[in-house]
Amino acid sequence: MKNYFLFILLILLFSCSKETSNIKDDSIANTYYKKAKKLTGDSAYYYYNLAKNSYLDIKDSSGVGRSLVNMAIIQQENGDYYGSIETSLEGNRYLKNVNDTIVRATLGSSYNNMGISSSYLYDYENAIKFYTEALKYAKTPADITLYQNNLGDALVSLKEYKAAEQNFILALRTKDKLSYARALNNLARARFDENSNYDPLPELYKALKIREENNNLLGQNSSYATLSDYFLDKDKEKALEYAKKMLAVSIQSGSEEDQLQALQKIVKLDKENYLKYFTEFQILNESLQISKTKSKNQFAIVRYEVKQQNDRYQKLVEDNKFDRIKRNFAISILVIVLIAGIFWYRKRKIRLEQEKELEIKNTQLKLSKKVHDVVANGIYQVMTKIENQEHFDKIKALDELEFVYEKSRDISYEKSDNSIEEKDISEKISELIGSFKNESVNTYIAGNEKMLWENVSKTTQDEVYQIIRELLVNMRKHSGATTVSFRFERTENNISINYSDNGVGIPGDVLYKNGLSSTVSRIENISGAIIFDTKTEKGLKINISFPVS
Image (cartoon, rainbow, N blue to C red; front, side, top):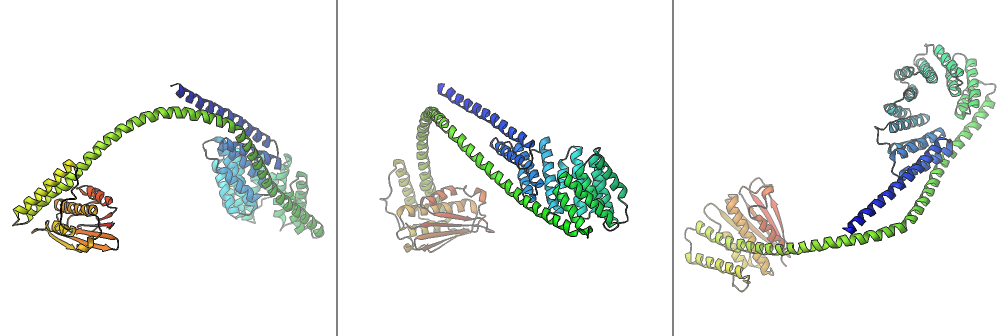
């Protein structure tokens, strides 16, 4: 009892230690995550990666998913669009609890991020799928409006204007001025793209005014780009004017992507200064491509370095735990050995009692089997002869009964009957099968020659004889057959016996009833095999095979 309580105490100590460790790890992960939220770019990515690994250590799937989605957004913002989609998909695998508010919001952000990345890759069909998924998880009005605007943009790119307009109209319900301005600008652009006779200027100017009043530089860039495109075929001077305004504001906001787009428009419109702006475009485009490539490489390096750092930390933790584990293991083994010793003693006592009972049962079963095989089947064979033969030899019948009697007496004294002189096995089998022949049953034998049984042991011969007897007895009792045949064949070191009758057969589910379980056991004793063919239209076919030696 004392050892039992010691064992329980050890379990409690391990549990407390594990709980304390988890609290500490959770604190570390949350610290990394909060620090990442205060940073931008590579620095934020680095700490989100640290947070992700810490959340993995404590099996906080939500924390892992949130960290990965934030990493994916940073990759998208730095032009690593393929990597961003891959990281978002990895994060989604950890965001399983969709009933959790934070998880749902994170999934919405993740799908929206994949939609943006797909749009930059001109994969608008997948972008539409991702934005649609994002809307399923959106709860706040701001998120809903954002995703509707993004979905509408992707639909416009595929010239699905009606569907795009529906999303923009829904987005116009927002109370946020900047979101309203974006939806209004996009709706006007979609309607004009659909119908060149439509005048979008009132809505475009209204959207631009809202953005200018709120000093929304990125929004102003969008308005200038839309107005420049509108005037491209109507008034090239105005188109150029808005393109240059877009360039100035994009430089002010630091948006290199917008600068590149503005320069691309100016190159087409300003023929006099074409070379100047084209040179600026090439330099900026090359710089952006290099920057994106560096970002991709930097993200990979950060993930690798954090993984290496985490591996070193884990190794240190494991090394520190090793000595404590050895000590606790030794104590645990001692307790287990003491408890196991008690159980072993009790189990051994029970086992010895069970073995004694089993030995008695096996002896009884062995005697029962011998009685069934020798006495019951022997008497039944004599009865069959008397029943099936009009003129039977009484003296011969008495001799056979005397033989059965001698066998039964041998069983009672457990003595061997090897000294009793018997007929050749082929002759015995032929007589046995022939004894079941009568007016309603015909028996046939093929291949049961004396040479067939050469080098077959006495034990195997006796078992085969009993097997054939059991088949015939079961046929007589259950099958109602009128024709029974046995075909014996020998190939090299193997003998096969093919039995068939035209009786009612035996269903598969009762195959081992009706006395045939003993038959199967005998075949196993001589290392043989038996195959029952119960799928014939009528009757039963059995194939028995066994080795000669």
